[in-house]
Image (cartoon, rainbow, N blue to C red):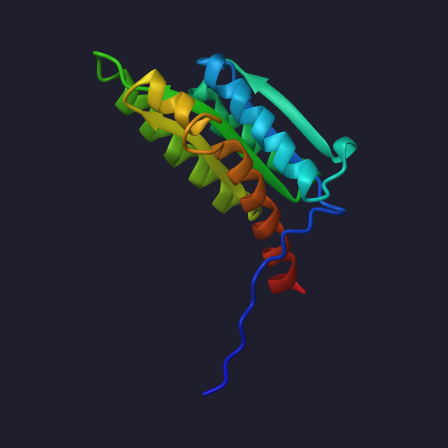
Length: 157
């Protein structure tokens, strides 16, 4: 049986990308941002085609992403944040609502909005995922947004 296979390319030329990054836990999120910018640059996204918006924390990510998406100026968006578990249920509310809100924003916008929000038990785990032992999830998010933007372009053509 012969089938058709469609996959998005990792070619960022001509793409316009927005990144919304939380300032809370900036020790982590600034590393995620550096990784995302390096990933976009590595795959050909022009520096002047990238817009970075900083918000207070991960709670503010969904509204900001939805607002950027509504401008129709972007082929894809990246959400970057770090929610680290503490001694109260605050983690559950922020992490859960950020995830739901980002997913909802993506479905309404019909453009890729990549979830680059770390949800970890410790600061060490977050730092590991932001460029230390486990690679950089910001870089991974950049690759994902490029691939998905290209895939959706191809599917809609």
